[in-house]
Structure formats: C-alpha cells, structure tokens
Length: 475
Image (cartoon, rainbow, N blue to C red; front, side, top):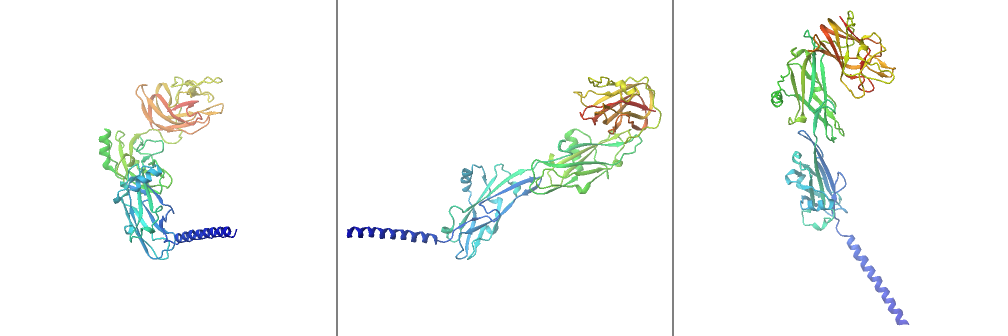
C-alpha cells in the first residue's frame, strides 16, 4: 500500500513539471521581438481605393494615399524597412477576391523616399510614405489596376515582419465623364437654334439670351468648374462637315456671362447654366443670312461633347410683342368661310365648328379634336375680299368653365391667293378667360385675302385642346 501511494505521487509530480515547462515555453514566445505590420493612416485598413474621373483634359478623384507601418510593441531600436512593388501578389489577390485587376506599371506611380520608412526607438508607428499616381490620365484600362506594396527589411531583420499583414493594396479604377452641353436634359446635345426677330423696317427687338448647361453621365466626386470660350475657327469645319454655309459672328454681337464659367458641384451631374447674350442690333437684317457661334470648353479636345453650336437665324417678324389691340375698325365678316384642320365633338355640346368664330357669340367656339388630333392645329379664314389689315383680335373660351381653350403660341400667316403664304410672326397669347378680347398687332399693315392661325401650344389641361370663340380682322 505504501509503494502504490508513492508511485501515484510521483506521477502527479511529473505532470505538474510538464505543465510548468509548457507554461515557461509559452511565456518565452510572448517575449519575442515585436512584429511590423501594415497600418494605412488614411483608412486604418490594408486596402485603399482610388477612383479617377476624367472630365475632358482634367482628372479628379484620389491620386494619392499615405501609408505607414506599425509594431505590435515599442521598437527596441530604430528600425528601417521599405515598401516595394510586388506584382506577384496581383494574381493571388484576384483569385481570392474574384476580381480582374491588372498590375500597374512601375512608372505609373512614385513612392516618397523610395518607399523607405523608419520606426523610431520606443515608437509603434513609422513615419508615413506617400504613394502618388504619375500621369493618371494614362490609367484607362477598364479592368482597373492593383498596386501591391510589400514590406521588406533593409537590415536583414525579416523575422520582425508579419507574414500575414505585410502587403498594402492600392486599387485604381477610372471612369470617363461624358460631357454634353445642351439647353436642357431632354434637348439634343451640342446644338441649339436661336431666332433673332427683326421688324420689316429693319429695327431689332430686344437682346436675346441663350442658356445651356453641362451634363455628365456620372456624379462627380468634387466640384468641377468649366469655362467656355468662342472658337470662330470651327465655323469652316462645321460647314464642310454639314454642307452648310453659316457665317461667323459679327463683332460685338454676343457676350458670355460670368466669363463663361459654370460649376458642376460634387455629387451632381449637371452644372449651373452658362448664358450667352446676343446683341441683335449687330446682325444683318438680311433674313437669308445665318450665323454660327461655336462654343468650346477650355482645355477640352473639341470632341462633340465639349462643343456647343448656336445656330442663329435673323427672322423678319411683323407681329408686335405683347397683347396689343390694333387701332382701327373690324372688317366685314359676312363673306368669311372658316375651316379647320380638325373639329372636336361632345355628347352634350356638339357644335365646335370653325364658322363659330364669326357668329358674334362668345358662348360658341371652334375647338379642335383633342382625342388624337394633337398639335399643331390651325384655322384658315378665306375673307371673301382683300383688306389691308393692321392686325387681329380674338377671344378664346371654356367648355362649361372646365376646360380652357386658350392657345399659348399662335403663328400668323397671310395670303392674297390662298396658295402662297407669308409668315407674319409668332404671337404669345395669354391664358385669358372667355369674352376677353386679345390683340395681335402688326408693325406694318398687311394686304391679305386669307388668314391662317396655327396653334402650336395651349393652356388646356389636355395639352392639345385649343380653339377660339371669336376672331376679327382690324383694318
């Protein structure tokens, strides 16, 4: 019994010694030299993404990053190491992350101080090293680029470098922001037509402004200011390409507001408006002559998106602006035989015929067919005899006070034979209620036997219902 107790006691003592030896070995591992690992000072991660956005000749986005290394404990002495490009890590990264990055050329970036960094004695973080992209405009591969930078010792102390956290990955992707200069988001990019109204006597109407903006296909990461300038040298090339014969702009015929500057704010894809003021007085009164104003983004490559062409046509207009009642007497309407492009109908009130515009009753109307006819709609009036007209008057109306027939814009044409028509101008009408008489006055009296009023837009809720209750000619 005594011998058995002694043997058991010996086994227990031996077990305690083994535990003590294991504990001592574990403690020695915990006292090994501190390890160097990646610590990116910008993101506190081992990866950093640089998104480049190309806007014309400009590059925006991240073109650099600062890196640093850390120690798991205070440095026992000054330690130097270096970040070096390790392209062998690209395939490893792609396999692990299911990506398709390509290795960046070594000439496409620089490392400050050649990538060399120092961790001072007693410190746990190194000085930072800047990575800067060189000529990022060349980095256009749609797959994107990967910059793997691995820490290498400079004094043979590789045992101090972490084997799992020793590589920093910089990812570079790029997007080309397509620019389009246009008057609004739905307009055709790069071109707009502008009419300059000139009276028959050669006088010009007030100055005209053309506004447009720059649109991009992506939201921009930073504010981008664009500047435009006129480039008359592009007129000849435009004429050759489009088989046109536009003239260059006359001197002092335009000005670009705010020096042609407009800004696309960060997080948006549209600039505030550019504005070009046209001085109509500087243009020829010859309505057969047309002009071209090419506007280019400064620093751009004159590609389609970086150009805006304003095609300017002087137009002789005989219609005075504003709702002006012509002074004179109404012509005799007894011989009028109006007809229209379409006629509306309704189960309650079916009389929407064109002849209602001459019956002297403001409660009867000519109204077009709003159910499929669409705009423009016109009413033509053979007057039966030739008169010299100073202008017209008209009234619109409403259907039981519910639908407004008032036209927004009316193009007025006259003829002496019903075959050859002359455009007198375009009148912008008010949204007036029934029984209110509106006036269209001519600058110069017109000899006419036929009238035609073409309605191109309306105030009606249906966006197509337009008409008149009364029309009169004034001589």
